[in-house]
Image (cartoon, rainbow over all chains, first blue to last red; front, side, top):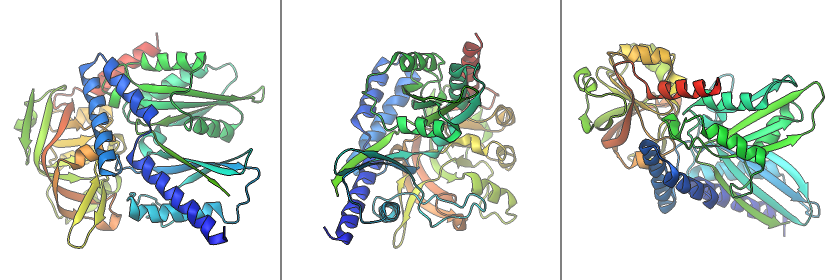
Length: 272
Length: 185
């Protein structure tokens, strides 16, 4: 492969993945929403979940973004040890987003954080990890601002209760992050390390078996009765993911990454 | 109770509804989010009237075509970001606000006797766009397409749940009070 073609192949895969994420909700999320719609006992919650499912269907059929907030694309790149990448990954992702903005289309909502004036720089984030093999595996997660704004981080004291912080965060965010939400918890590590752990959990599949702590946390969140869109019901969260890492004996960082029901994800892999 | 309201919406219409009712709106609505609120309040020559108007908290995904604008998706945005500016906007005569996620208790109190708040399912950009017939005009386009005010012709826009009524009642506040009580148990 020549230099240009590897880059071009990567860009075209990235655009396809963005389109897929924006227009088709992954089956694990769709099925979790459908199960919740059946299980809900609140009539209003049921109706809201049915509206969401109908919206998902219409978007997929039309090939159009399901939500006007086409979000912040977060790319998780797993780079095989034996790959040889002869182009600038970040530049290629920026180009993919620029092209996708016209093609899909995506909403232009990037601004300078100080002046608040529209920014031409593409808005996205990247997480890198090294793995075995000769492939580059990329997952894109599309994150809306409503749910990102509801996310929180606390440097708790070691004796403070993690569960209370999480439940308070979810309770006070109410309907703002577009529940039913997916909650990613990063416990331990450092200030930024906990946030990265929390964010990384959101790349996991909802079908993955949950551990006892995750199940208990989900139960407690759903007992709050916030419900779809904060208008009451059993379905406040579809899933809780927890990732932990050791921390200093004097610390207890906890990050709560919240994702909206539009848990938009897509992946691709290429040999390089 | 469920019914179709035609714009302009008078306070007498608003008073007919209480939290839990479902309404649909036909007529003209104006999108407005963060920057548009600031602009509407500072603009002495505001090119449209807010008297009996319906404000939609939304930053639609819209593309410009040769002679027209095409709406791709147009669901609601988080209303709470507009908490601070809402009393001043309602003072101008706004009688209906459409959004998602609810508004602060200060806003709930201010809306009493003046305006109601209607919830459209969040994230449902395609459902919303299907009820929009036409883009009638765009104001403050210099703020960018997301933040501009779009004057939209809508038909049976909804279902809209009366989530904060003009009697000081808010479904969100009732739900939150119950959640908080459970937490403090």
